[in-house]
Length: 454
Image (cartoon, rainbow, N blue to C red; front, top):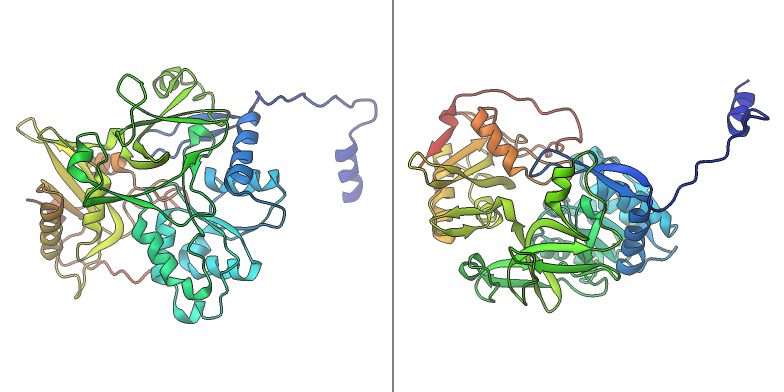
């Protein structure tokens, strides 16, 4: 009976067959909702033409892949890097992919690299935090028999890329045969289907260190200060420019908003003409990201709307967060910085950080003091407020990016799970899933005594 049912469903009823609906490259394939890291998620209209163009850009132009390549991915399929990057794009060039459960990787990061070893994978992608996690969590016993010499494209994107994290990953697994050219920084966003730029598949990691004060003034001048990772050039058939306030292109090493155009750029947001008009200028997509070009390579500085402006000077939250992450008792990368209005009508910097209270980290007061001293010494500002929160409660997108605006909203609404004096927050458990990767996080209101105004 089941066989007959399947046959009937496949063949249809005789005499009632209908011609298949004709589909063109301009037709809508699906709605891809933005991660909502800076605003309410919006449905990006992705056409079949967008998918074809971006799949070709990723697999042919960027990865130079062949049917001999093999992929490994633990990325969730509800995220563009997982769905388009490891389902749609590999199908375009018939590349095999081994899929791992996302939560299995989160609980035991070693399964990712073990799968690369066993499957002889050549391509994988992950956000920056995954490389930091694997470097820290994988033991020598787990990695002793791995041969990672097969891997040629360790893609990194979806969140700010830290050069020291990628270098640390390469150093940690060089004894397993990992090639120094295997790291592949990239840049992309949902409004461009997925990928916008790739680093050269055959080159080693490149970074640029610039003077922070000059960058705040709008120019990336080489010097001591902030280290940024080169994310490569736009794909063939696509254009990229660094735009000034009026949309005109800026020169070499001038900091401005990244604009892109080409067949991968989508048609806007479904049912939201206002948001579409704000994000698109003719054929150009205004990414909202700040960056500059040096020798034709793209370097990203941060989100334009996330800039912290204090006393007329621009501060990038990523700079502050990188410093805070080094403070004793702060979980690596699990912090955000943003500005709020002061009582006097000005603005001050607020820091929210996941803390690990314990004998080695010290008390809450010790951690807050460490944060304030580091930020003052290296950034030159004194935070107006420091809030310590429980492990795993920092708002994030499905790809693991921190949500600064959501953290700010929750702080103002009293919804952050703040630590209270005397409470412990151990750091021995595996990190929880990002929002969207599992059950909704619990919310509780706790006394604001777990924060400090300084």
